Length: 398
Image 1 (tube, rainbow, N blue to C red):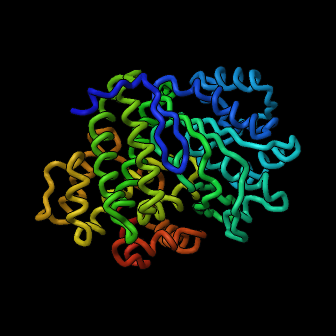
Image 2 (image 1 turned 135 degrees about the vertical axis):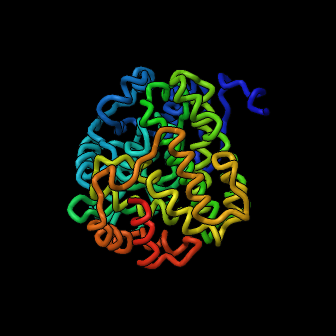
Image 3 (image 1 turned 90 degrees about the vertical axis):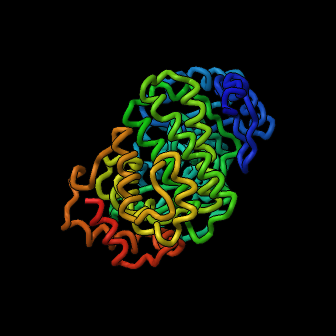
């Protein structure tokens, strides 16, 4: 296999819209990044993070030293939680504005990066707030520079123009997509990911799989997204079991991070549809629900819905995780094959296991159609995404 010819300790430059420093030791490229920002006149910035991971991974030791070396002042907002909220974004933006921050460094998984992208917009539009962004009350076309230091292998947000936040008071979890929030630089360093728990490792990897399945089957899918999808699913199928067996396996983390990064590029091009549109209401209602777990629960029912319309594409890209399927398989057989794979990596969950019931389906369906941006995702699903289809997917996921 070609992977044997890759030196995972050699730092590669992968140019998407973002310049990604990729490989074991890539965190040290923060010195070069900060030198560039300093040359551009950045003297102050805000660091967006959660409470612990940015320090426990060792990332912060390197970043803080580099900030001091380049005489860049910083303020740290360390209260970003999974499924970041409009309230925390506004709090961080005020902190950053008062400090007169000129750039954003996000250290963490998708949540700190998405929150950081939002703050980057609000630093340019000082009269706006998070609700203005996520309820589409204006269209931003500028943001301060964003540096994404990725600590997980799943979201792909370090290489794309998407961000997500929850509007707490409305149970909305919209997604935005603007060219101005592509990170200028990103760091994907597998050694920063070895402390991910088994649950986190599973859920973020399943997130990447969902990204590419949707991007390869949407109405705007291209040969590019289909080829990327096959490669990403192959990486996850091969290396997720290895990472679960040995969390310190740097080669496994490297290729899972590679897959997730490509997944971000993939859905930046092919966009998303059912699984993400239907998961957002789940974690908007239950903030503690991991996004990746919600996606895993919905995936078999989504596959069942779209199989007949996209069976050639799905048969091609799903073979690494569902080797028994063929274009002659029926939708239920394929859905069961995907569920068997999820079980094999330790994710057998259903919606009822997470506290949802038949009584929740109407509200969830309402949110899928009323949350800003989600109806747009449903419109590019490969099958007719009406209320009956959405309700059926939720019901089949119970």
